[in-house]
Image 1: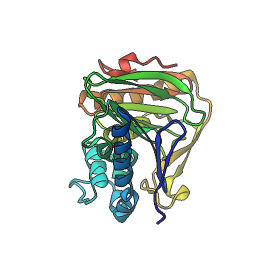
Image 2: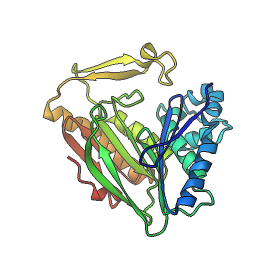
Image 3: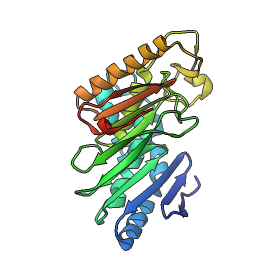
Image 4: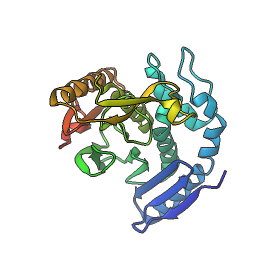
Length: 286
């Protein structure tokens, strides 16, 4: 397994990459503290992929009645994030990107005096905010042609420290048809798992949606023979609304269970936002 790549981007952010893991990290504070924080993050990142690969077989198994016996810290974060959703088919892999971001963020901020920081793992983002600090995060509806569709402002005194987006066209397969489902939660891993389930819930039974067993596309997929979405044709406004409402119901259920703060769902130009009094109440999508 080749070693991790480390580089400072032209704007000063830290880029860490190995295999499928690609992190962009930014910290705000005194220059010496930021430099030491970046060194800590890079050191922690060095064996993340290797450790995950050593437990990959178990990480690809659906969560059952007993918590999976995993050893690595990132793997345990993954299992913890998906455990509340064990009533449905879900594997720890549903939280892998968010869990990696959480783990590297923890190393980044350990013992450091930083105003704020984030670790962005392909759109799944772990966030640190010191007292009095806030961070404005963009919402992207179309993962194929990324452009900002809205914003959410995160504050230190709110419980959101993780953002994740799922949907068809992303890095992972989806059972649903959402263009995007962006979730804000207490951790990036929790947001990652919930975004997967909410995006799956945005769905419609129509010939305009083409599906194929996940294992036929990728024999190593943790979804096995489940039919994943490979194409979505033009849908009527009514079908779009019905599909989004299904996702909204799932987002509301997860929020009322205390598993997420808020969510923004999009499909073919329509939106649904489940915010309560959370951070996405300040989003302006569309």
